[in-house]
Structures are given as C-alpha cells and as structure tokens.
Image (cartoon, rainbow, N blue to C red; front, side, top):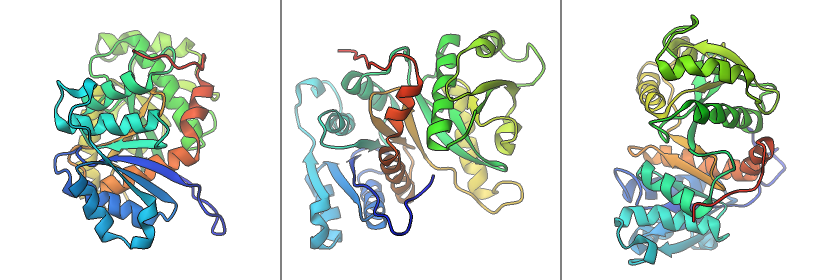
Length: 323
C-alpha cells in the first residue's frame, strides 16, 4: 500500500474505533486498537464505546501517549438510536464523529446493515451511487486484486454493478496505483451467455460503460481467475456471491496459502465505497490483528486522501444525503 520514506513523518490520522462492534467485542477490539496504536506513532484514536473498554486501552499505554487517545462514551438514548441496540449505537457514534470532523475515518466490526444504514443516513452517498459496495483487496498469485461487492448489496441489479465497476476501477487506480485497471465480471464460465440472468445482461452494459482512470472491461472471469489474478485487476460481483467467495478464500489462504507461497491471511477489512467519508468494515469474527489491520487501512486511506480522489474520478461530485 505504500509507506512514507524513512525520513518522513506520516501525517496524523484520527480514527474513530467502534469498541462495541464484532462477535468478540469489546475485548478483541481493545486488542486491535492497542496493536494499531503501538505500531503507528502518528495515529490518534477516538475510542467509541463503554468507558471501561476505553480505560483498558489508556491503562495499557504510556501516560505520555494519552494525548493520542480520546474517549467518546456511546450515548445511552440518542434520539435517533432509541429503537436500536447498544452495539449499533457504537457504529452510529463513530460515523457521526467523522461527519462532525472529530475523526478522519471510522472502523467497525459491527453488523454490516447497521454500518451501511448509518453511513447512508449520516455521511450521505456519491451521486449515482444507489447502493454502496464493500470493497476488499485480495492477494493473488500475480499480486493483488480488488473484489467488490463483498457483502453490502446482496440483492442487486445491472445498473448497480455497472456503478460498482466504476468504483472498483477508481479504487484500483487511487489506492493500488494501477494504470488503466482491467475490470472483469465474475461468473461461472468465460463463454458468451454464461451465468444467470443478471450476469447475461451485464456484458453489453460494461462494454459501453464509461469507466474512470482509463479502465477497460476485459470480459467474464471465473473463480480460479480470482486466485491467479492474471486476467483482471478489479472483479465485480453481487454482495451475496462476493461474500461467500471472500470467506472461502480467507480460510483457504490462511490454511493452505497461495500456489507457490506459504500460508497467507486475507485482510478481514473492506472499504465501504460510495459513502461520503472513509468507513472501514472489519469481519465480525475479526481477531485483534485483523482489527489492527483495519485501523491501519483507514489511516492509510485518509493519508492518501483516497476517498476524495475517487470521488473526483466519478461524474458529479456533489454528495447527496438521505435525510
């Protein structure tokens, strides 16, 4: 992902961390936040959740570093949260911190639906983006690949996937610095007409779609192509299929590794693309190192001004809100 030169100090990044999100919260989130904090001396954390969880982080670091940690207790009865569970309130408070300028990005391993709805309502969306895309970077035998959607838009339509192709191309160009990204459509075969009704309708639309960053549609690809990484830099699919594929690869790579490589972890963090801010979503079963990686990704994206750069690549730069 790139890093500053040895003689350069990375820019400060203020990350709001949802301490209540995830299957094993808050303990695993506390662990991940501590790891990220200790790895990055320019990282500032807004600790969103129960005071006792935030206090566990404060107690574990040098008091001289406390200025880089700020506690934000989750409101017990925020007017917008009265009918929601307390864990969901954590991610909403983290997203609000981004909207209000208290944080540069938000990270949560909470319920995906809560995160998507909070982002839509509080941060708004890019024009033309009706549905967000959870976007993951996968290691491949050839390098790495952008896969989207991996769980946000489960039931989708051709127009949404065309927009996701644009978003994925912008991500590959800005974050991975890929010149003229190659965009492929995941299906069950490379022959013309392969796939379900949705997949059969998409190729003509993708062939004529205006893609950013000089990207081009390279056709149908299969699951094995995601592992090889050779035909495409960006792979587009619906959130249902993408989530199944991602979780399968996570297990296979961690236990077996890529061909010719040792065991390899798939990062359990994805950027929520199309939202008017930087929101990183971690796997609900994420470990401490996974959470740390998600926080590091959020800091990296902020330092690269990645979201703003991607917005510039997509037509119409005003962000609309759901109210």
